[in-house]
Image (cartoon, rainbow, N blue to C red):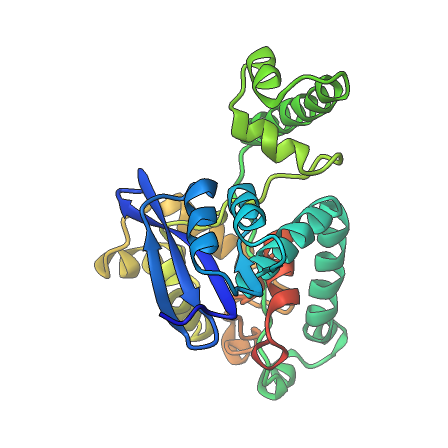
Length: 304
């Protein structure tokens, strides 16, 4: 076997992620050269000593592999692979944006208001029916979230508790306690301590990916189509989507239609002004969470 000049080192799982081995890849020829029985530093060091000549080793952030390479090929240059470089950058960006979550929400608010400003200006026009005919772009409402006061209070308490634990973790760390000792003292998992020690500034928890979803969401387009056709009866709309499989409550549909009636330019169907109401469509707006902004920064420009 020809000893590779540039070697890739990474772990792999033998069975159910309980037993790990080490894969060695010739990065210039793009092919595996060996599979080691475990992911220990000593095993990697032995292989490198038996195959001298490796000049560059690409690895993950494992301290174990760092030690094995240093022992087996001390003159080799250790570099991070592209995946872990992006992972490091992603985690750093997430922490930075997480520390500025309130600023992101303000930016989101300003951007959304700017995007909808043109649509809202139709309120100042005199002839509503002419506006409806000339209005090629529909008004895009941002449907309200149905979050109860009780849940908001619970969320605020949980956030305050996490902030307190974060402060106590750093306080205990400053006097020299180990991660395990901190975890035992505070009654939390070691992973929680590790996560909090990544940044001295408390980072807001990311929002749930299913936030704002409801049983009515799959029927938004249908309801808006019927609404734009002049069908503004909540009861009829409710019965129609029930026939298509909707299993939610009438109250949810009622909240939806009540909100549509608050959109600037809405007019009930009356005589010749039957079609005067502005067309409405659902919004494709997505919140600017730290994770989404991080993804936007890392995304290729041609894909944005």
